[in-house]
Image (cartoon, rainbow over all chains, first blue to last red; front, side, top):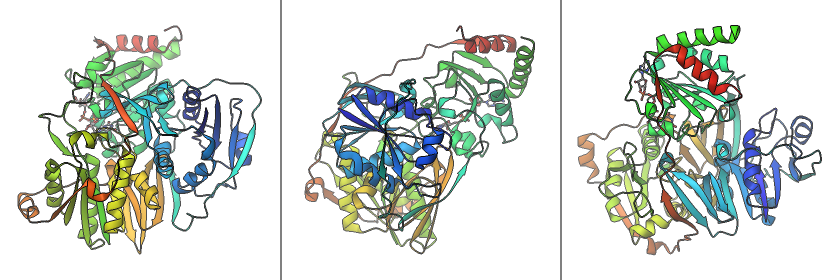
Length: 317
Length: 255
Ligand SMILES: Cc1cc2nc3c(=O)[nH]c(=O)nc-3n(C[C@H](O)[C@H](O)[C@H](O)COP(=O)(O)OP(=O)(O)OC[C@H]3O[C@@H](n4cnc5c(N)ncnc54)[C@H](O)[C@@H]3O)c2cc1C
């Protein structure tokens, strides 16, 4: 059995999600290739492949290339014929492309896989994770997106790494679809989906200025910042901070929910965290039912105190 | 410009779902059903384009059962012009469709109706698949703009802001194409009583699945549905210093 993983990358690295996908792919296949959509030289010089063998670098990509779902799909399809499965991370990146690849191969797609029982049987959450479904696929090729928090990333596998190349096929699409610009959220923090600590704020913060309380607390832990939909909709935090059914799924060591009620759509994105702490003034808020530690009180009083105690303790041991 | 908006009837987002005791699925008997929230956003966007005279017709389509007329009436009351109901032979058959089946059927409808734009929800909140829009675009050979938080249409070009992992991507495509909606694209309106009355006069065309000559694949099959593991409920802490202590314990390497 042979599998292809489509790498999720940023400027500096192969993202953790990629290594989780490789781990998942190993459950399906003995040979796993990794396809990387980045300028070849840049990839070779900058990325740590953890010694993965069989890397396919896509050629003629520059920093200016429009990496559209359409062109990436064509490129993946040009290589698809020898694979029994193609895996993507279940992130906005993967979800954008995987169904397109599946439809063009005339096969179904299995989303957000959290467990692989066999080469044709998978478990995935439905209804915002309030139920799990075991699904089987009798399609000849399995197109899968992986809930990356459910698979531990692969470790370093050795120094050797075979590199192959294939061309980027964009001619058919470049006049019909293009990227104008990416407005990245300025962020020097660890990535939300893989951070060890996530501090998240909700509607109760009340303003973007007040949301800095969340940021300050996150700073102490060198953690990432999350937000509820209500906080994002109100403009307290950027869209890519949203945790939940329709945002990001996180499973850190520690998740601190500040002024978040814990609607099912929010819990869907964080309930697999190891330790959950809720700071809320309402003991009946649903978040308190799933939290390991609940602190009932006014966040505007509790959080500054907490920040003070934590910094003092950190400084003086 | 003509816009096609596919919609799905799902368990309302406020309902706490229950897994059936025979593990075949989720209880839907006597449960409140609604239009998938993302589809409401799609309808709203299409109607706004019509109100700004950028679109001249908004057509709603659902693949469902006779009893799904109600969500079509609802969509018509929100400002759509007409609706199409494609009925499956049975509820079981409908449940067995996977996203590719739905995309294939939508493709046949799109070929008939020749819309310039399809706007649809990025995911349905029941199976949470997030697939159909991308699949439909691929089957039609059209470009796609998924997870849209802003849409501008000008001289045959759709300019779309997309919510991506690291922020916002601004992209554009030459129509026809498919747009899938994210939560922040707009705030859907409520249907007013007069509009609900007016919607009764608007046409709903019904066709049977069999008339479309499409054989469902039934390749991705749900075997069992079960409850996820429950989290143990925890402790309520009473002082900030206790909370600080717990946080330190959680993060110390020995824990
Ligand atoms: C289709 C759909 C998809 C959705 N997807 C998501 C998603 O991905 N992620 C998501 O988060 N939501 C999502 N939602 C929204 C979700 O249903 C909730 O509306 C949202 O999570 C609520 O955000 P919140 O907890 O910040 O606000 P609220 O529910 O208003 O909660 C605020 C909380 O703060 C507490 N509070 C108030 N003042 C204070 C104070 N001074 N000190 C301490 N506590 C205080 C209150 O007791 C309350 O518990 C979705 C909804 C729909 C319909």
